Length: 308
Image (cartoon, rainbow, N blue to C red; front, side, top):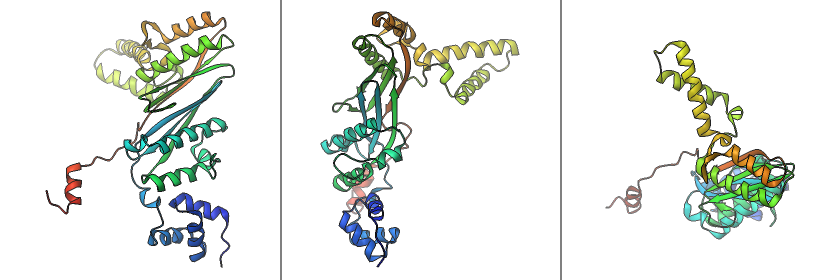
């Protein structure tokens, strides 16, 4: 008989969502071959998660967890918005955010391997939820904002619960000034980020490839103009572009007469100490995921055997 280790059982459980004893029995039956064990469980009708793993999970929740000068954002995806309203799924998302907050990494695989408070690992908790709820789920990404001193403000848009929603934002203000005053400013800037969707903190932090692409667009739009005129147009166009996409240069949504830079400067006066906008994270649920389009009428007809 093959030597079945706890690590082998854990791996099979994560891949299939099956119970621990079922996984152990499957491995014993196939002499420890993981892939053969998956097939064995499927044949027995015991593999609950594997058959769902190829489904696109583009719904779900963004969850935020903040403690003092550190905050994390995670995106936990499901197949349908209906599951996002499930209390067990919400608890799972909130708990994983808490695990990520306590971790010293934002690596998704490391978070999945971390201990889950109720037992096992985060990956196992997700596998259990897949088996229980019946939809594919994925921990897609994790991000962190932290400051050495100061506050991390947060905001959830389309909230379905405390720290849970469709858009989650974290903003870090570094300062030794009054924390209460800074907290309110950080929250308002987080609300601004949710609405304005900046792509970078300032022009120096924008991906150079993005800047070059914008230059090319400006050059193509103004093709035929003398070289010296063209470069001035590109320079002016980039300044306008930076005001649109860089957080520090954007007009504040709560008071468009001010830029975010001016808001931060005013916060420094109110806090009685210098304030630096250290960074932000904006997670919008499902952004960048290619969702599968479906013809609902056709699906119903197919389920009815092709009859209208």
